Length: 185
Image (cartoon, rainbow, N blue to C red):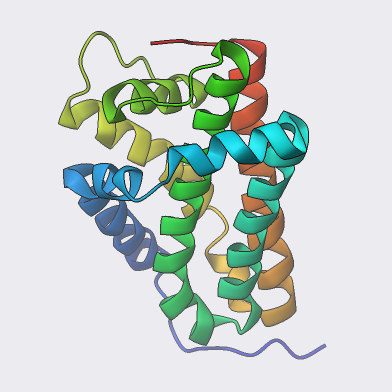
């Protein structure tokens, strides 16, 4: 089987680009994404589907963007990876909000409390206040997930499977962590 070569591709440069994008999220982007999520819609989704189906729906949405960004190899990864990263964060927030609503009956949550739950689901100690350092630690955990599969995405079909599968499993793992060790703020 012939494997296409793209010249010298520096995976460190790709990882650094992902880190830069996630660092931008840590400087206010997380809050902007959070503010665009309709919490009432999440409540309705959990009420209509149940928590397990809602979590699965979020995982499938995350898988879709992961598969799309890896489907065309390098060409779609360069354009799709930032959008995939944003979608992955949004789905993580949605799952976090849904589980909190499911466990407490309260569907409105503020950004700081939601982010603390996200940090806890990733096993990051958020302490009392959410600081830039906490957000950067969450970014570091996400880089491990996102960056570790970047090279594999260079092969179109393999990239789609890996990108979609990794996103799906990431969201399911976040949900599993929150369900096993509920954290309420």
